[in-house]
Image 1 (cartoon, rainbow over the protein chains, first blue to last red):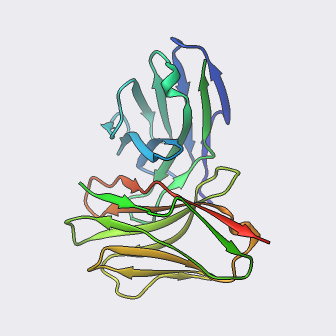
Image 2: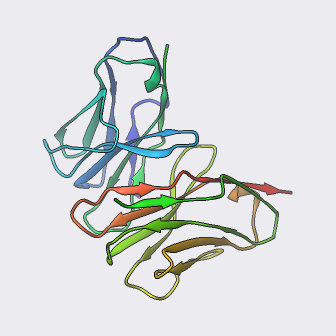
Image 3: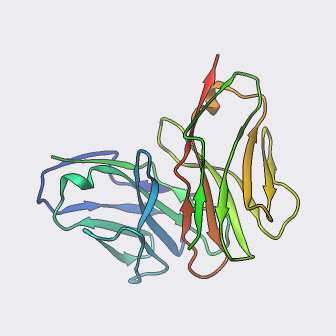
Length: 112
Length: 115
């Protein structure tokens, strides 16, 4: 089975901190994605990556950056956390064929 | 730009009954994929069913089936013999067959199963 692992299920950070959310997949997938999920808004794409060192902005990239130094790892970085970034963050990966995404278990981030 | 609309924020169904969740989408593309994902309270998003736009036959996975109406841009999910474990948030999703292959999600429908 494909496994997508996010480093934390729950995280509490202070305003202004630099926050790293890590995601690792074990199936050599090329494509990786970061979404945030908010009630009533569904899932919104923050960033995605087709390959190592490649990144593309999604629909809501402001306040975020990403890093993909290795194929299996895709990191989401909050440069200076703010309270409006309190949310559920979901990482996903997919193979080139269109069989759908595989999701991690999600990280619930609270910024205080 | 493509959009996905789920018009029912919440639904309830009696255990063992059948329920249909609605989804419509908007696209100018002819080749794409549609999905239904389930997110139970554990938060792990699980792929329920997948439909290729070029296939006329509706996809089926055990108790889950879809009604894919390409001309109407409609993609509803039918759950037969509803079980307590079906209680979850359900997301309809669209993915282009083109290179820019991000998935676009609807806002979700929360399904309650009444014992």
